[in-house]
Image (tube, rainbow, N blue to C red; front, side, top):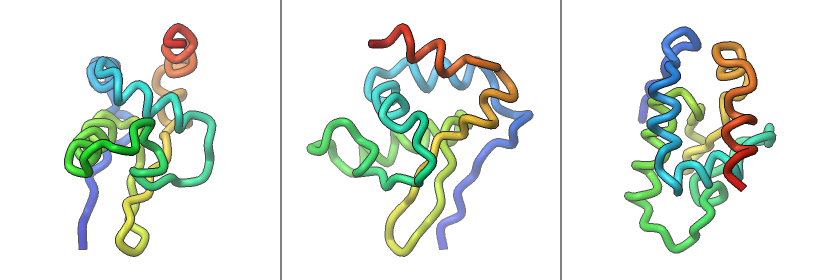
Length: 103
């Protein structure tokens, strides 16, 4: 079974978050997922349904390693949710501020 590596709350860094969100597609993915409490599959969360699965998996790996998303396995699907609580605990208001200026 696949084991996903997630940084602990204390290991989430500002540099890692900003680097992950520097890519426009990852920024769009996070923007589409923010505020949703239900886990989303990678294909549900992507703003570009024609994206190759390998590219999408890479985007979610980068988001996961930066501490932005939590990924769990449900059957054959990877389910993702934004780690808003953890990010807000480390950097209060950061995500909402970044996404506010990205309209």
